[in-house]
Image 1 (cartoon, rainbow, N blue to C red):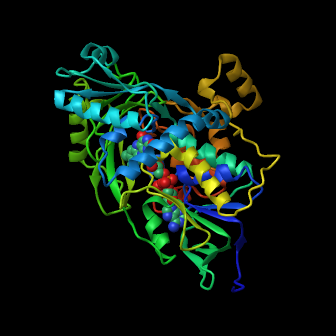
Image 2: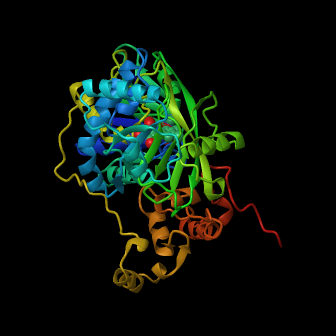
Image 3: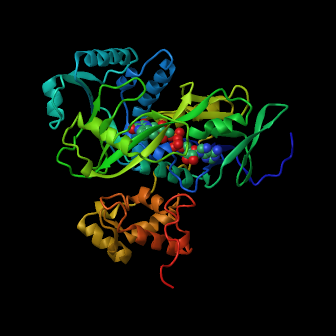
Length: 497
Ligand SMILES: Cc1cc2nc3c(=O)[nH]c(=O)nc-3n(C[C@H](O)[C@H](O)[C@H](O)COP(=O)(O)OP(=O)(O)OC[C@H]3O[C@@H](n4cnc5c(N)ncnc54)[C@H](O)[C@@H]3O)c2cc1C
């Protein structure tokens, strides 16, 4: 074995700080082990993990609609992990204090053919042990969704489907992992896995910020996982994006449903849905268009119009004028389409959690599964006496009672300075978000940690103030503050000398 110089030494390196990588980091932080997580971006939160519907699927019936021979294994894994996740999530989310709500979902049919398709899916799900979906009548469908358009004959109801604050989930998992000793390196791209040629064993990871000596590398790089896998000499898949365009609607709309509303699912995606969110907004979509450009995040007029028109077939009152923003998320699709959760048979110490198309619904279960795989592979995992399962979350000003608000302002007058008026976010909270690991270093990170800028004005009023606070707290000029990644600086210079 070569005696390479190294910049860091650890037992396990996790590549990618999305919902999957951060869940695995948190799970491994229970044990007496040195763990690092490297993220190629400046911002934490992942790619797909920050641009999705935030739905926690607990029933597999809709996934079963997409069942084909080719996808069968994929569906079995999805089902297994969504079901075991349903058992793990309650305690996981309680410990991390992440907002989550079971609101249920309804899938609607216009024709008997669609009813028959969904009945087939229900049967397949039943054979696989999923009993929490049932048929509903036309009247029940209209009772559940009073603003439903004409022409539906009935559908299927899944009471266990839930919604989650997905931005907070990733932050909370990372925060708790860091509180329990995990080291996070941002702006650090994993470039190649270093393998001892004689024993075919991982000895390190070359990154853009130096060499990490390690025994295990877990590839959670999602869309970019194939690039890293190729450096091991064994990669039999390719990753490609499936874009999902999503218009975001305002809060308090008279036609907003209280359950998730979906059409009869298609073969490759569950179709354009109407999903209430934890914050009270409504998401439409996502669309599902395969592509090649992994960096593409733009929305198109045609794409958004199509999503709105399709959603209007479910609830005709939906109006484009109620949209406050829109985004495109890239699903991390794998060809061949399988979830890979394994310790490599070819290279000892190289592991993958890749191709996961429902990561929000399965991350903790996947994390526990990967932990078991590592242990089975011979990694010594001694539980830590001092593992702290609870993430230290501070109550938000907007959720405080009047008495609590008065006490907060008395202890720190910056609680009295409201920066984001739409979401009632104070200066004190923004300062805390900047200084609490994983620290918010950009305007969008402040937004995802606190919702400052996510309201109706979309940061029109608070963004300049957030830039000033970031510059002051990070002790850098305002020109260095970015919206998100380098190159997205907001202030480019002075207009007047
Ligand atoms: C529009 C849309 C809607 C969705 N809706 C839902 C839903 O409602 N419910 C649900 O369960 N799932 C949903 N999903 C799927 C879900 O978002 C993904 O399954 C999940 O986010 C995948 O998490 P991840 O951590 O694997 O990937 P990511 O979040 O993409 O994280 C991967 C991370 O790895 C980093 N990385 C990559 N390569 C390297 C490298 N070489 N070095 C260092 N870092 C690297 C990336 O920068 C990124 O931060 C949706 C997805 C989309 C796009």
